[in-house]
Image (cartoon, rainbow, N blue to C red; front, side):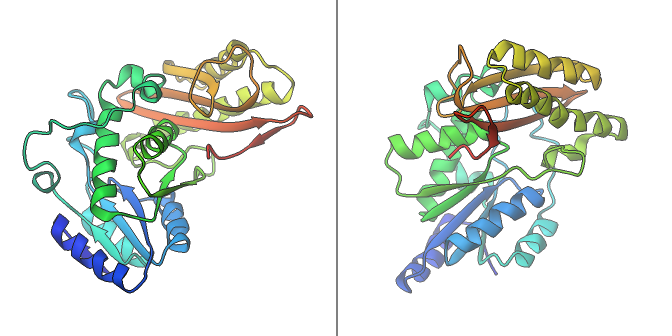
Length: 293
């Protein structure tokens, strides 16, 4: 496994691999690697010849009152994780390498960044899209793999790739969950034992909404109301949103049909967690969990 800290080095490494006819897959991460990243790496390893993982905590996607300063940093463990996963190249730039001067050029995917997390995290998806565009230009991957837990991020990146004609092919990894259903996340480490117990209620709340859809309910407000009620039953009262939207473009639904996303965000003390289910409502009335794309 090779590690590169500067853009010139990783480009040189990968140029040599391309001359050998190798294809390149990329898994962008912010480190604090877990089983969700493992799933992405496994998929990426099967999709290309050379597996590249980037580890970079991007300051441009954090707001001034968010958790940039305390976001988990464990590079040594992350490198060991990457080695076990058979990564070929790990790109570990610092802020000076990624943003050597004032950043005046930004990637903004307007309509898709506005709902859900976009309402309470202004500038977040601008920071995400910009750093991912930079990584795509640096690594020039044939394939990039992202996790579906960050569903809105996946939609934003998909539209950036489509509308700006990046050549990369995007692949999603299904959400990986703990035994009680909590989606694995680097931020789960912030939870104390009581909060961790409550956090399992997020997935149960999504399942309450799914159960209504499986029973034939098609009114989005009724479905999201059930999700909110179940969160309150679990003691989760600081609910940022619970919404049922069209999965393709995150637009508002008058009536649930086709492929939809049931998404939520809530805070347990200072820890903000998100989760979602992407569901296909079939013509025979059945409901099937699926990927965004």
